[in-house]
Image 1 (spheres, rainbow, N blue to C red):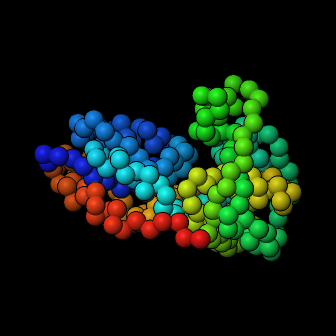
Image 2 (cartoon, helix red, strand yellow; image 1 turned 90 degrees about the vertical axis):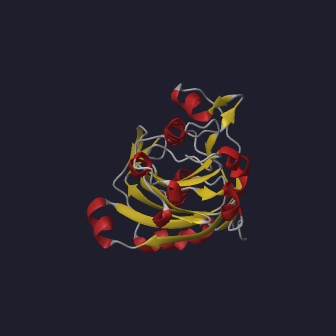
Image 3 (cartoon, rainbow, N blue to C red; image 1 turned 120 degrees about the vertical axis):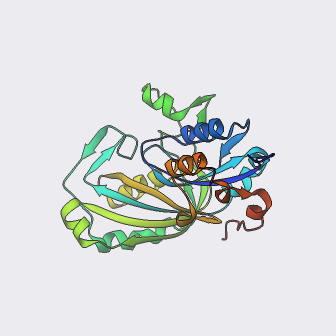
Length: 246
């Protein structure tokens, strides 16, 4: 066991678990007091979750300020109150945008834009989480805020589009950006129903998905005492951080 555990673990979070659950597992396994993560992933989302251990928790903000890349799929025809698969259906129709219509509006969302967070989000309203208020059926207002979308592209898959009513996208964005809010606004602009059915964070600069490890693999290697090559020193990471480029 290392004398001082101060550094980073790059976890590939599975669908169905919370970011906090991953933090708790690592905290208990390593028997350390301070463990945090650099950017929450919803339970329905998967991908890179940057875990800070020990003194690395003081540097989480530097990771959070870096750009993120996501791949996600939109299912046309149904809108949910949370704008993802976990929500309740609030409207539906048979209308589906064609591929040209989708491509024509994507540039409208690039650059620095105003985005209103989803009602089902972790943002606090008068001391309470927005998603708790939304589940309770309470009325409240969320203010739009400036966010940054560097790139957005449609990944054509005719089979998905024709047979599953799905369109696949990839974006690179800055901190505080909500994919679910982007999809909500795209649907509004196209005057169609739709919601996120797949969401994966594939990069959290300077980390990429191919350099991450699942929590099950981490636990397996930990039991074999063969996990230390997964543990990255604090400064080796901070020296590689690239901030949001505008």
